[in-house]
Length: 124
Image (cartoon, rainbow, N blue to C red):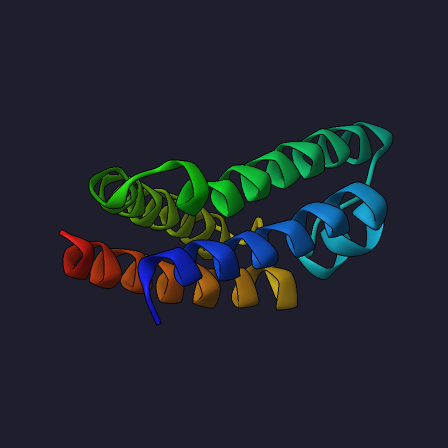
């Protein structure tokens, strides 16, 4: 495995989340323990498009970034995964997020943070 593959795998997982948010918004949020409203559906769909955009950026990073830039961006993506984990963990602790969506994403954030940091170091 290398950093380029980590970006690509992470992009695929992000795309799955983005598609879930965009096209199965109610199911996605109900699995996380959220109370649905029309406003939450609207926000979730916008978030889905944003996550899909980030997935496209992740997918393309290995194509347009050189080794040094990819390493720096890998560290940045590792930090982003930690930030997502912290806010998700906080929401889980206060009871605002739960269920399969929250727990699976928390585990994925940990795994990808480790992989991004580990393979960014190897690329330097």
